Image (cartoon, protein in one colour):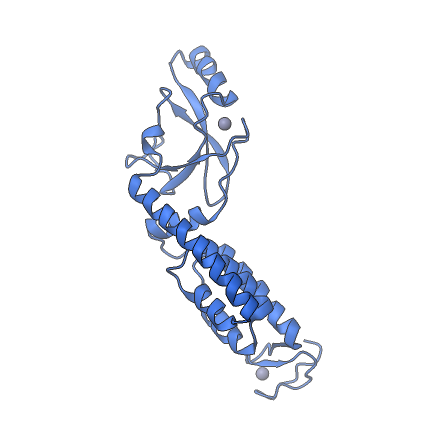
Length: 225
Ligand SMILES: [Zn+2]
Ligand SMILES: [Zn+2]
């Protein structure tokens, strides 16, 4: 896996929908993990987690009783979720505010707001490019790593309907650091090929007609491949 900065992880997480707590159904908060490792000493494995901070969450309400009865301690659980795997787990908290101090810091929120604004503005731009048929501009947004992931994701989808064979090169040669965008791009590459009745030569990767029997670039036989 490629090394990711905390910023990259944050941008990726902000682009995805927050999960709902499986215990109470409430949308979870994004939580910045504390700088100290958690009690198993292994650390959290992610700089951000989702947490259910609902004080009426059954897991949390029942937790006080369960831990008191089983361990004689005053503590409870809150539901947490890993942004990567969307796997839910419980973590112990020792008071109603346990953990709440770490809901994403202001800087992160400011960045999020900024990205939200740009995503909204960019969405309108994309709609304009779509009606004027400006695939080049759509591609530009998609390839610009500083654009909000959500916006790039929309561009990745649009380009499949708007892009031509020239766009394929950029799409194939750009590594996308975000799996969701990468998958959208791959689907769009297939859509562009469908629209132009083309495919990639399995030997030299050049673009050939879908029905080609011999690759015009490398001369290899490609019928039925
Ligand atoms: Zn909950
Ligand atoms: Zn070839």
